[in-house]
Amino acid sequence: MELQRTALPGTGVAYSLATAEGQHIGVVAHLSGRRDLISYDPQDPERVLHSVALDQSEARTVAHLLDLPVFVDQVTALARGLDGVEAVRIPVPAASPYCGRSLGDTRARTRTGASVVAVVRDGRVIPSPRPDFEFRPGDGVVAVGDDAATAALRELLING
Image (cartoon, rainbow, N blue to C red; front, top):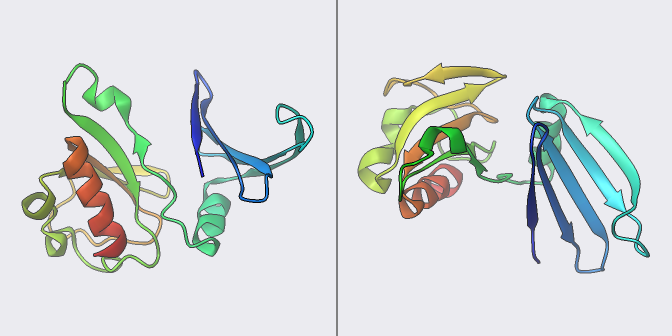
């Protein structure tokens, strides 16, 4: 399956894919946090048949129902101009072994090389979380590191 990602300047990011049965679906992730679920016409993949708008809470609920870690959002403005460094936002799924546990328990920097610089919770940013900060389902961990480090942190937060 191929997931296509398209930047929508001033709006957000559009994601689209074709299922194994040939259905074309997508999600528009708005900068505001709103998510639009979209299904396309099988005869005309550019024509939207249905669209459902979800707020942040509804989108998280649907993601949890689908048992998804969602995706890694690029937080591009943080790492602009720093070759080899990226800033990402990693959602913490309800099934994460670190839900209800502290940042210090992860030993994230030591184990992955990525630095956790903030956590987004319920639309607010918690900068520089302390080692005793406890994760909750739906938290968005903002981390900085190279590709390998941020991928390792994503894997750690999702699977332990």
